[in-house]
Structure formats: C-alpha cells, structure tokens
Image (cartoon, rainbow, N blue to C red):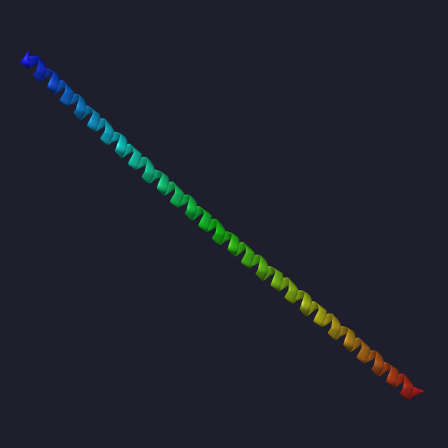
Length: 102
C-alpha cells in the first residue's frame, strides 16, 4: 500500500516537473517571439526613418533643381533684356546718324 502511494507520489512529482519544464519552454518561446517581434518593429521603424530621410533628400534635390531652373530663367531674361536694350541703343545711334546726314 505504502509502496503504491510512494509510486503515485513519484509519478505526481514527475508530472509536476514535466509540467514546469513545459511551462518554462513555453515562457522561453514567448520571450524569444517577443524579442523577434521587437527587433522586426525596430527594423521597420529604421526602414521608415531611412525612407523619410530619402524623401527629404529628394525634396531638397527637387527644391535645388527648381531654384537652378528659376535662376537660369532669370539669367536668360536678363540677357534678353540686355540684348534688346543694346539693339535699341544701336537703333537710336543710327537714327542720330541719319539725322546728322540730313
């Protein structure tokens, strides 16, 4: 009788130990999964950060290009105005020459 009780107690203790091991493994796996997910989230956030940086760089480059185009147009217009003024001056000079010849 006692032997059976001791045997039952040993089996019960073995069952408890098995359950504790199973629970520790489950906890360990849960922690591993949590760390992996946290790492993935960090990686996603870094990816979003890099994308934001690239977007800012693209916007900055677009702004620079727009400014260069604006400056080229301004320079072109200034050159056009300068040529027009030179032509007017030449025309006035010719007019004065003709006037003197008459």
